[in-house]
Length: 234
Image (cartoon, rainbow, N blue to C red; front, top):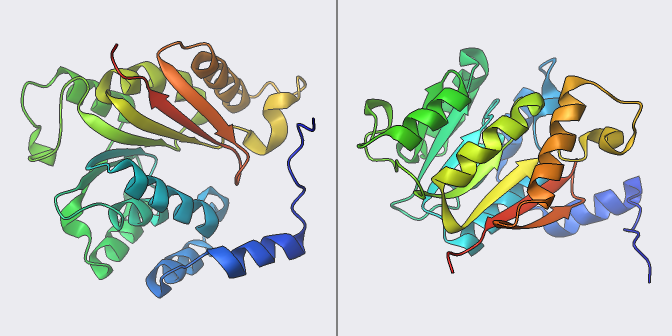
């Protein structure tokens, strides 16, 4: 039996886009604006964005935390899939990039579903975990252990292993962690790559694989996306 996935040629990628992606014009506008930035490669693809959108709908998530927002494409995909009473907390360190995100949240009528917290996401997660009430910067968001339905991890790769234990404590049993860039352009499988980012992702992948508290599937979409489900308490 073959272990190989189909190789995606440019023609096949175009076919997938034409026959799968339903990208709103406002999302395309954001993608084009972000494409002019030097860091444009940090933006997720529309194919991945639609994948995140449908996962949100399937999971029924109402409380989401996104670690790494950049200019806001993924947060639009999540927020537009949330029910009326759904909320997403976006964590990032850049006011410049998230100012672009804020503009598109407002243009899409989603600003009331989105909280933004600038600063260390590790510190933000710890505050939420330790809180006895919702913090002032997210007044009607979730807090405390086992309070979050879905996480999206797409931030500093060397810290993936440090985010993981905090996420596992915050996420509900049956909740979903979606981790992006887990193949890191293939460098995770090449021992000659010893950059901190590559080492961080390798360690994260190993932590997840060896964790009996979760189910995991590493999906070869985009730059590799891991779907990690916290098991129900038995």
